[in-house]
Each structure stands twice: as C-alpha cells, then as structure tokens.
Image (tube, rainbow, N blue to C red):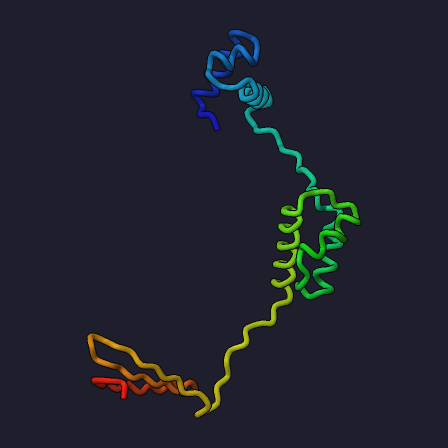
Amino acid sequence: MKSARERMDIISAYREVGSYRGAAAICATTPKTVRRVIERHEGGGVAPQRKPRPRNYESVAELVAARVGKTQGRISAKRLLPEARAAGYEGSARNFRRLVATVKADWRRDHHRGRRPAVWSPGEHLVIDWGVLAGLHVFCAVLAWSRVRFVRFATDER
C-alpha cells in the first residue's frame, strides 16, 4: 500500500499529465497502480469492495461432504476425484485435495470421540526403567494407578 505522500504525488502527477501511463512514468510505478489510486481518490478515498469469486469446487462440495460423512472421514481425495470429475469438477487434483482435507477436518471436529483417559486398576501396571546419572546407575519404578515412585541408586545394573 502506498503512503499518503506517494498517493498525493501520483494524484498530482495524473492531474498534471492527464494519463495513467504518463503519471506512472513520473512516479516510477505502473499504470495499473495509478488507475487504482485515482479511482480510490475519486470514490471518496474508500477502497472498492472486492467481489467474492466462486471456487471451482463449489459444484461438488456437497458430494464431497456426503461421501466424507458416509465413510466417517476415511475416504481419500484420490479415490473421490474420479467421482467428482464425473459430477463436473474441472479443477486441479491439488485444489480438490485441499477441499477434501477441509471437509474431513470439519467432519472430525463435529464427530470426535471425546477424551478417553486411561483407567488403571490397582496393581495392574508397573513401569520400570534404568538410567545413568554421572556414572551412577538409577533404577526407577512407578505404579500407574497410585503413581507411587520407587528409586534406587546402584553401581551397576545387576
């Protein structure tokens, strides 16, 4: 985006020469930039609203959503692309993969299994490990249910 001073220089150069190309040559910019600055200035200084462009995959978005829901988010874009081409999709495979990834992420967010924490039973799991700390061997054991720790130091692991 041009600064206010640069915009004023473009506007004054345009008023002086009367053409986009001439003003662009004076201001060392492109005629397209001069045209945008002049149109914005004449429109009250507000940037023109962009028109939303339709995506090339909008015609098959419902098909993809239906197939992802039917397969519980397990179908791949590679397997779905021939079906989409038959339904009229003419875009690239890369763009189609982006669509399928977005739809699958949305489906997973709405259909998550929830947090399933581990449930330990007393005495069921004991986690053990050896480590070496400054030449001294360390034996650690942790009971998973109560999280009671047992630590002993030794000169070797026998």
